[in-house]
Length: 340
Image (cartoon, rainbow, N blue to C red; front, side):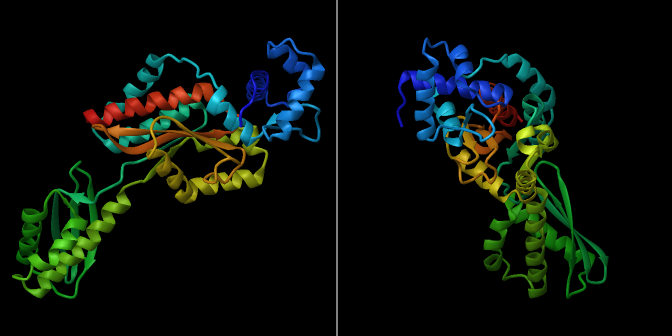
């Protein structure tokens, strides 16, 4: 819906003032801060029109007005002036935390930096995890009890206990491990599963069963080791009045953090877009809390988008400051992971 210049100016002034102090904004204040030479009566008429169109609302306790989700959406889409921030400050904070060889540690540190810089919650959707292994080993613990040791390409080690129907000898276990490592190293367990049936006909059935059990256990182990969503700074939101004052909203928010399904869906949607995306509670079906907003941006590895990061906070956040923080962090994370 198109607004004329005066209505846009007043809406922008109202949202900025409300974000700054959290109080309903009256016509007298708008007259002073908008820079428009309009009478209070004219301003009241324009505000009444904005309210009728759904961009602002009047709380029962005040003559002033507050932005609605639709008003926030209009503000961030067409009226927002993004604040120029010192990239070197963000970069210096990130670079110190990104000097590690572990991609998971880099991602975790990025979430912490987002939280620290925004004073809200930082979140990173990790790259889709393929259950690739570099090497496996079978260790006989006792009769019909075998320890499966899985080494990932990044050096991470996962262990799983296999309970078998056959008592395998140490030489049989070495034979089975050697076969898998020789034919399937640096492939995913999913690939091994599809190829296993046809390629193991020359081995005895009991050996085939052992390898199939190893593939299933290995796939589960690798999937469990991948933390799909990394969140940092959730406790910061307890000090946000707009969220903490409503126990129902707070409960929904922390359910979102605990369950993570809706959050993953939102981050997955934003990874299919380019640049910074803004989701506003009450405006987006993906957010369960009306007083909540999420600012996201995708990140890449060697030019390919592999995940999304962002800041979770109240709808009354300083978008002009949070947007460049998210944007710069996505670029620096992309560089760190690509060079790793």
